[in-house]
Image (cartoon, rainbow over all chains, first blue to last red):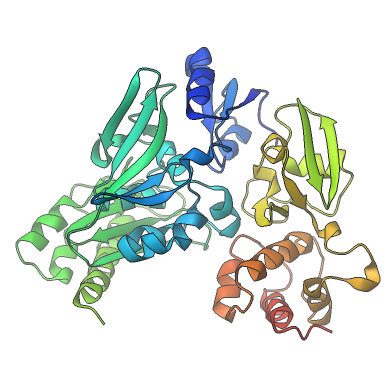
Length: 275
Length: 155
């Protein structure tokens, strides 16, 4: 399969990328690693007329400390996240989840910004950055704005980014509570999660339990009220609307969410208690 | 558009359609047909090559994205059949292939895996091959071959 014809433009700076995209408005898409966009284009589920390749923007590849936050450049690959000693020390949840995205080839090419902007509810990192209470930084021709992770994911494959606006950075506060866990259930190793859960302290976010990543609000409330992990996890499917597809029906996903949240909370709590 | 890719150490330059995928550039422009197109949906890994030393699925990379960069295919591992790469020798010694369709991608995934982790555990080899499907061997001999190559006893 070959994508429908498009015009390829390569940007050498963020400013140039914004200019190139602005010329074609809705018809242009940014290309980072391409591991979400190119498969959609082959299937004609996305048919952009212009691809603006931002893959050479080294200025967007970094993981560093900035005051009380850890900041991650949008073009940082999953492999780089998984190998970052800073993330292993400060945000092990992100490093560990990144090491479980797709397969090694996908992790070499795929980027955190691409994965978030794609806004697939079955992807790993959207739920992780919700559990981490991250802020996303987007640049457009009219300036820079910050979007909370909870407001960024609007619907299936729909983010808060405007046409021509580029996600440039993810800012993550150092977690106040130490326990963390990322657990997902897949059919084959490389598949999207049938369901998954990211936990950081008392924040719990669910993968593929609705058209966008969700905070498990009822679980978080139960934990705040002092419930044990097993009791809190009983609320994991409350308020969710999981898809019904060839991998699993709704009731199965609801069951899976309760099981996975229980496991993740146990793991997080044993990590918080220390070795 | 015009692209120039260093393929197995030699520059390959051509005028191509913007939508050309790297795997088609390698097979149809560079004439290197060992790299197979399998699922064409970045699932099976048959098209795995190294891009700047890292394994990638060449059906999910545009040739334009490889412009100015370095690609290695299985043909580039050794120029002389008598002097096979240690991973290739290990695949032969351990019977790590049957029909052979997945083999070029499997070998390149293994080369990338061992470059990142020269002394992997069996578990690490198995998870490192998650992106490559084999429908013949059941994987056991492939895993054995990669562990043998890592130990250096692949004669």
